Length: 99
Image (cartoon, rainbow, N blue to C red; front, side, top):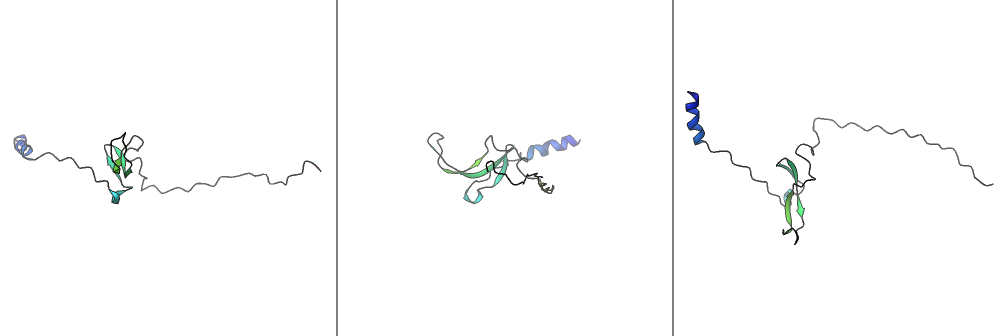
């Protein structure tokens, strides 16, 4: 019975629309966004003849970018202070080799 009521409802409801990529412009330089599993960064990139692109602001989602969640510091974990290293220095005065 429930399946019979659910089928017409599913035919009426449209599928969820894909989200648009956020704009990368001068106001968002340095912003990061998770796109396709990568933590992409917004920045100015030079164009060129080889790439066929003009200069402009673009999202950097290259292979060197971290996966989503890896590049962000955990907010709940407090920073632990680093212990100072122990240095054992010999401070005896040097004697001259020749007198």
